[in-house]
Length: 404
Image (cartoon, rainbow, N blue to C red; front, side, top):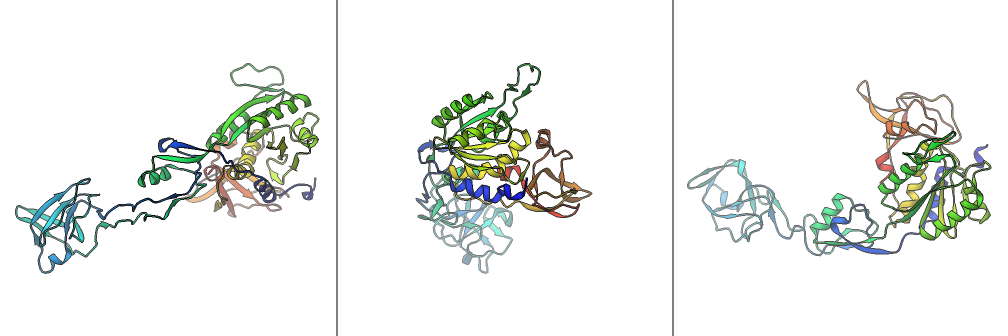
């Protein structure tokens, strides 16, 4: 097969993303339940954060000018966090704690490690400048500015930021509903005995884990019988229940590859065969106007094609803004003998080789070797029509970045 017969990885991603229809349904969830959800609206800051000047350290609030020519001040008060700060008497200091509001009239805070305390006050052991150790009102967020934009995926830090501006309930998009369909009469669920010619269905569990990490809800999870009619009926049922159908197997050129055939019959096949290794027989189309992403049947190909092509499409369907996966450039700790007109994604991990950071490849890159994906912590890219020599710089994507 010639390169011209295959769609490039970049063109395939653009094709899928251009056909994504973002979910529009929204719901309101408690902030405590918002992790990994997608914001359905912009959130502006209702009030300055912090709401007033406060101390960055435990110490003493003073007026810097009172220390001109004088290093000893009597202590006239005490301010604990959460209590009204009152005012600073001229020529005195106020005991203050981290997070406490600055008393009126004070313009500096001296760290407690920089003073000597005695019965008649404090002696200052270091220079004091106006504004030191004070966190200013609004230094984190100012009232009216954008805190978080619509389409933001909520991580722990976004949960904290929403909490900091007083948001207890969050408007988010409904989760993308996905149907998982695995093909093959040879597939047996784990826990059952294997018969002649049978294998355990690993792809189902890889896909369940990937979709959970991607923040999707799986609404249907079945194994298709290897018949055209059963495939057609199940795909139509899945189309009625899900926002997206993802299949594994059934999209190559064999007589039992019914998923691709059904897509072609319904005039829904818009992409087939990518210039990617592993994972060439990726298909995309629609069944009754519901998008279908057909992944290969080999276990490692499922993971690679989902991460490289599936995740950009899912992100677009979730209403998230375009996300560029940059990766990092690292010296290769491996070499290749032959080039390919397909872009190769090598299961690899980042490690130290004789004290130097390098990307090492799993020795067996067969698309059926699922154990390679557990050894690896990312994918190294070998561009089309190129080889790699040890020490060459390659682009490396961690699994975590690809799943972001």
